[in-house]
Length: 487
Image (cartoon, rainbow, N blue to C red; front, side, top):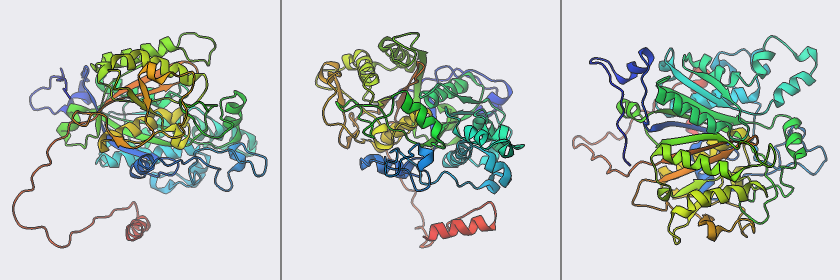
């Protein structure tokens, strides 16, 4: 991978970190490094478990956990609505974030999840959260449903209190994180429908390149808290009667919902390398557009999807024939899948040799459609795949959709675990996400070239025993950490 040199000039005696807070400077087309990861997904409480789920081809879609039938929108006994569910969404360590029990109860669980995942992602990046206080670190969050606000209103005036406004506004998804960590960079919640979280990634990268911030925390969350969002989706005819996402398959009849979230920590590559941060992959470019009309407000338009693909690869400086994999939006809808396939075939498939079809797949077949968080979850799948050098299988694919001529489009759905298509080169992949109102986004990701492991320095052998350092916010939390490690 060729890394373009930044055009930022830093005065003698000043560090790169000082260049942004004082006098913001543009980083041009600098690649953006992914330095921290966190997720909580169906069957996967963290990135390691998520990779195992993907690698093993696990289907995490199923009936709702006990006590959540009404929230899932399934009122008839014995017919719970299948989805990709988290085991618990009603737990939160309020004291850890210095939030009172009363305020925590008024908070949308999506706010709580975003707070927790942001903290975990920062720690995963090797950054002490307290060190970010006062820095121009940006927060871009995404969500699209207000189930908890609707439940609060249904609770009557007695349920409304001093924390209801801040607890139920989507605006606060990003603002909570900025407040908790003392961050002074841009802080906003993005809602472009199902493309929200990938658009948030695009905005975060642009903010970093413009010099608005040195670091960005970006994520998306989606929880099935009440009946409203499921009823709305079902009323539109979007949900699958068969209860699975059959991406690009002849059985495609809609999508099944999913919940959870993911958060990434991003930095300009040069700054990440200078700080010695762990770089998992880089985002080389991205693009956002809108369908700008079509058969209906909710119908996708092929020409617009082709345009967003071309723009993304142009900005990434990447030739379409070098792309080895695309993580599809891939909802498994009869209308959406053929349009997406046709656009990919025109821009990427046609650029490849006929005997080297473009590999495609969709994480929605594993965990359902996370809607506002779907794009960043697909991006996380690609990040983990580049790190491990493997492509996990896409599920629920048996017979090609007759409306998708895969051979003619030069596409192939990967149905089994396999090594990354080009083992001798740095992986290059794309991630697509499309919103119901026509806002499209595509992100171009590149893995790192394999480097020789550093040689161990010669010297005294390591001792037989080494300390394992634990920390906690208070003595009780420290004991719980120790008990968790012991188990």
